[in-house]
Image (cartoon, rainbow, N blue to C red):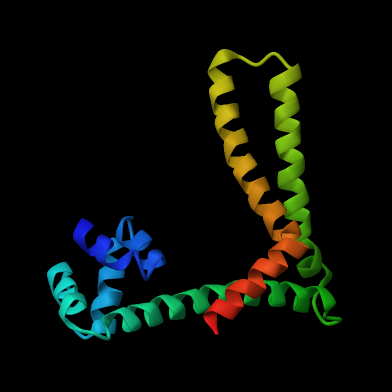
Length: 165
């Protein structure tokens, strides 16, 4: 597998990353379909080595996957905007996402305060710290969702879209 990663990483770093992780099997399958060979690492490596168009085919595969990721993110934002701006959407649908975001963020601050200012039993402290870690990760995602569209992020999105075109 390391040899395959070495062959691909120069022109398709996203696929090389997938090959080095838990999605390696799926990545090999995608590569084999794109190259029209058997679903095996050796067959894919042989095709890359012998097909002069293999690099272009793999770049196209990475390009298509990247476009799908961008479309998925755009669809999530568009859905949120459609629900919020719709006069026919029930009120609960309009407030559930921000209410959950505020609840998780508020709960994490409360848990920080408990750990700092309240005497907690030693056997409960570990579980509270674990829960706080989970909440902290969720808060990071919430902040990224609501505030991730800064000018820098928009510029980055435009650069990425220009690469995809």
